[in-house]
Image (cartoon, rainbow, N blue to C red; front, side, top):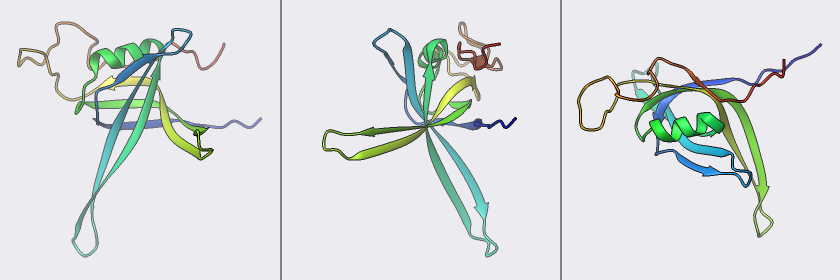
Length: 140
């Protein structure tokens, strides 16, 4: 028996506030971007930096949590799978986009509470708590 694996884990900062919408059937979906950076020094001692941007999609309960608690600039851990979407525009041009479909999310870094400098939120999930989508990947 042969199995495949499609799993992605990233830690980065949100590039914009999450945007939530609903499918025609009423299911919530939230999208946002996350930037990851890496730095290195060449053998010549030259410093380099590279930033990679990822499109993130969250569904269901996880979509609602992401919309409610995540903000631009916040550090976040995202776990999920890669998915390629393909479509054709009105002019017949074919497009494709690779995105991460989030199954888990963890808020990292300092908490930013409204009107306070405390690191403890009055409401909301614990920053060490892993939040998962309500979808079961395996039906057993």
